[in-house]
Length: 421
Image (spheres, rainbow, N blue to C red):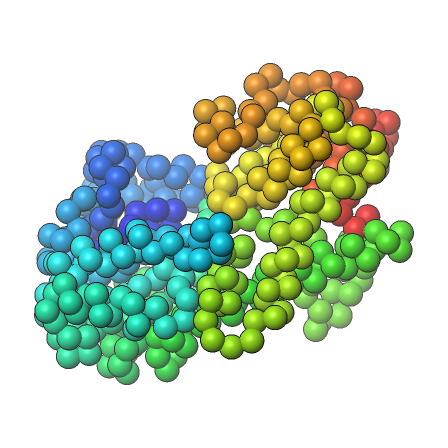
């Protein structure tokens, strides 16, 4: 089939490459002309995405992958259009639809009868039917369910292993009509070789994605609340959770200094934007967003006033060994440190000094460097190999992910602070 993928980001590009690997003819669309030129050469913009460089090279060589900025033309030539443009939130936690609306308009301009249109971006419930369907119909002059098929199917992958996850997890599919859902299910079985779980409609599919990500946020919030209690009681929460999880009905996650990434800190707000009771989801967000401040308050309790003290935060990325800073907990940690007038620096081997500075943060140049304390936010491989002893003068380590061996840190004469430990 001729497949058009709109949005060549960290999920959209591997998705396009996966379709091409299965034998489909794929045109990837993006508004970033430099990215398109790079992809049509020999480029791979996400080198840490396992298997992506090889899949792209294979697709280009076989003539099954091409990138373009002309979304309208690509849509007009496609039998299937998959839209996977990110939906972010503003400071008031409201969805920012500009990019998705623009993509929808471009798709509508090129839409022709008989096309299957699928949204994969995580959305508030009802968005596919209530917001995007009218715009597609208005721009194209066609009717969904009659002239073209409209479906929602959420992405369910993890950055760094997208190609593996596309085959590992069932593809949830919900259509505007039963026939649209059946058609999309058949497409994914062919174009991904994946198991498909068809649900009643697009709203059910939208809701399922928000349910699974909010569950993870709440699970982490519960782990964080346990950590707060453990600190008050003088108990090690990591032992508590390990013991509890030895019972097969307990699946408690791990506490930390916050939750980052495009998904977990964002999608509960999509759920709360709709109808129904969301008290638990809201409480989870408050707990998780408050962990950075809690952690720095513990550091202050151990060190005394932080004003003028040099503190290095290790890891801008929201998780180890993946270059992705969206909603990183480092931002909350830096705010909490700056409010105490600390001299706070950020280091991450995956980001350049310019990229760190572009986020309003002060990059740590010389590395490792003398400091008064280190905060571990993302324990990249480089940090694991280097060891805390490399930081001259460091008196306290705040292990924001409970990832370091406590005994080794204390053997160096450095005070160890964990979350709930």
